[in-house]
Image 1 (cartoon, protein in one colour):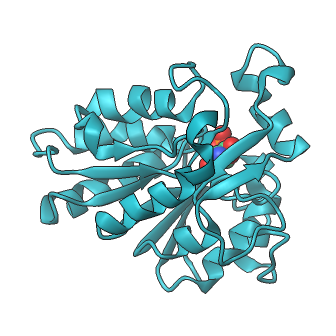
Image 2: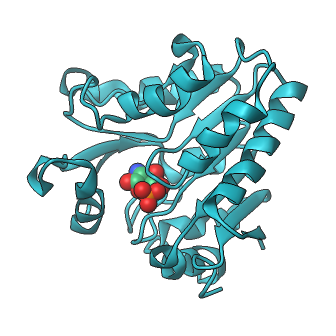
Length: 240
Ligand code: GLP
């Protein structure tokens, strides 16, 4: 079973994960990080700045999990913009070394293949940060996703679009499609760190960590991975 760490608050969880990332970067300056978006990893990104003070980050590489399809990359809610705003700029990372799947319609037919090749060229992802959706998705792998899936286009569920509507001016603005690392891609990272905070995540978290391994709960794929750390507050741990 995954190692489950219950922390008193999202901030404490953020500090814990940030200090582990800092330790890993000190040991391996060209560490390849897997970056998640959404609100869950924000305390990690906030804690990274003090944790990494004085550390040379010029060689660090990063790959985001997913991106909306058809949203202008400059849109304030594109994951390219979010990763730039929350991670690249505050930490002073080299933007050329931080990749986000390309969600532009012109290139979407081959964007998944290009992304997989880039991850492989980097030598794979060393530490993958994950959040979890209320429907059990990781990345944007919605229920029914194959455990062998690679980076590809998916249709967002109504539940996910409703959950993410808070980031947009109106629910209609939430894109219908996304491009996401597959469950097979995610499972190839060396170390998975799944974060969940708040009561709204308790059922999905318990299903992912302790429920049957099933494509109807994409997060349950983590049970197939040999090195998983789950960092949760008491509310998210309520159904464990
Ligand atoms: C989002 C992202 C996921 C994230 C999840 C939970 O839509 N695609 O990577 O883990 O859904 O989001 P949040 O952390 O905002 O609850």
